[in-house]
Length: 286
Length: 349
Image (cartoon, rainbow over all chains, first blue to last red; front, side, top):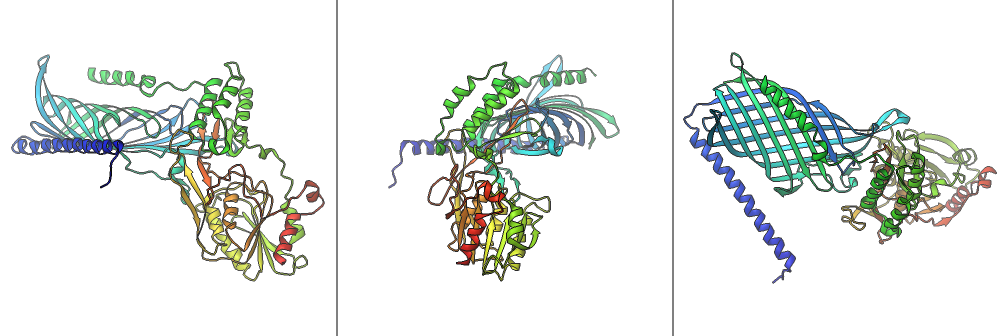
């Protein structure tokens, strides 16, 4: 029989522990989903679908490619869908961001593209009153994929053009815990604050050396969607959104939305980023 | 309206939290620029071990020369001196705008005096043509100089061209070899070829190999320690659609660098090929990093450790020729290319 040393035993124990945690989280998520199906069977439903557009202030410090902070304000379009039951919420969101980033050294710049797709299910666990306003508290989970892809350029004066120096990315696919506070003055009007924090995630980052991701045939870098599986707090991020919707005309609502996102991950080198998004949009209600 | 004002105010407050959320912006001071460069090399340069360089000692020595009053020119010279200790042609330092740069190699300061393409063309060649977006210059060796039919191919670079995907030009080697099908031997000249893309060298080399050849192994850095490397990656070349497997004389000099040295290492494995001239430059690691400093300077360094199949690292050494033949400046001025003469005689034996 093969002998295991202490390190191998600890590895097996840790792996078993990680699997147990993963099973628990998925079980909890499934339980919440099944509760919602039962509880929503005969309740009033309302759907909101629409698009919004706005600006995104984004800053990133990715030490894989540069010690400098790059930042800018760019565009932030998004598509969103909300299904609101009496005691549960389904939300879907797809957002895209594109920025031309600058740094303190005016000859270094970067192109950044970000995308986020999120599905959330939240279940009302309680409600309470503040200043005679009824606030509902929802708890649930989200499945999120978030990509930030950055190409770093340097100004090459002899050709009066930019040369590509390196490329880096952060791609997180995560199961998040989600919490939401919501105030509904009327059936078509709501004000909500939601916060998401990843619990289990899979993160793709470049290899330590850029040469490891360099495709010599294509003469370019290759990036991947999946990488290392992490548990909270290894891949830490926080995504909070404040949404206000109110009737505009007929079956249409307008929406104002502020979103804050921050993430920190330390492999293969530290990457930290945050963004503030302000959007306004129109939603069809049915 | 009140809610909107609150939202905008919150966004404004959070936007001003950059230092809290991302950490401090590196300072643009002489000390900070030096420290960032030193640390980047410390954590990423793969050749401290094989070159037996004590990077910490160099930090102690050079950092002591820098203060907040160090001028940009002084910092440039101190940094250049530091990097020269690496003696690595793949180490570069660029000024802001990349209008000026220095190499971390002592060899790069030597004069390019031992080769003249114009001399080769005028004295040795006939039927001279170009191919591969101008990167190939080829012709036949004059019959008055050789009893057998010899072809000559000068490869000026292995860089990407501006056409197609950048490396398609290398496929023109097949057309050249079709024209040289009646030749008894070929002289391939990579003197003063500073290298380029790995793929172009492999395409051209594939036209000369008779079997799959693993010619080098490379290990990329996978951590900040000086000995943190990933698994060896084998670099191989297989025969292409058109191949020339007769006698080959490969001409090299000290400025046959990087991709040219990979090319020379492939041909080193062929019994029908001999390398004539001087030892190659001695820079093998892939150079794709363009690192940044707060003052706008850029720098580059290799990020792989290269070894031969028998486990030796040729960095800083180069590929040693089978026949060492050197031109002097006077030779070239007098219209002599002893390396070409030797190659023609060798292929006539």
